Length: 393
Image (cartoon, rainbow, N blue to C red; front, side):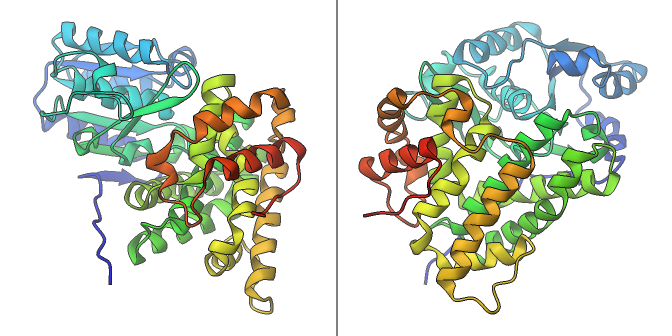
């Protein structure tokens, strides 16, 4: 029998109003100079002040850094790390979606290391992290990435993505307050919500799954399945926003330990080459990847169907797996995300370069219950272009 290593972030606060725990957490470190890394839009609409005002009232020197963009390129990470090194900061706070949180983790850890960010990338780097870095508190304002509880920072390269990954990147504290997600626009709610669902689904079918991650993943699927459409339709729905925040957080715990697989591996090149958001890249691929690998995880797909509100009780395993794929297609459609690559203006001529880049994501592909070779990856991209679910020949 196999063993499983389970790692969680040291401390989390969840629930409506949990941002009230920020000041007590900051006080533990007796810092003087704080760096808050956030999205410029959050600064513009005043949401960041919910974080900075209580800190400034306590006498802390707070610097707000907003040079954050979605799917941040390597250059953005390099610039932020240099800024952090030169700033004399004692603690880093990340506020926002996955990009802001990933950059906050990167800044906190790499600012105490030598060399460039590029030196520490998973696929091409030559250096290893040796120090924990500055204390970091992560506060998500979207329900999707799970970045607040993972040890990964994702960066965009010229045509694909790579990561810096180490347990030193884990937050010292995560504050998951669904009240902060109420202002998230419909389109972002949809994309980040499908991202969270993908995390849970891929964690559940991962070859590294365990009873602990299975329990987390299925609960995340239940929460997201019953609330995503509601949150997209009515952003002020408190219960839907709470379910989505909890679902995203729990999915993060699941996939941090079990890993994600084929959907993410093939989504990275789409984001890298066409600058499509990570959530949308996952969404457009989710039904096609799951349809392609269906036979390798039929029992678990029946469980996913049930967690999404379906009923596999009177279906064969094969029938339930087909129904699962159909339900995933339906969710993507219902929240308004295009269901084909063509819907994102990705031409058929790009499928070969996507295939080549997707095949390079070996670290992620290794977790797929069906080994995906280059010809399989090509077939999945082709099916996502035509809008027809394909299966291995």
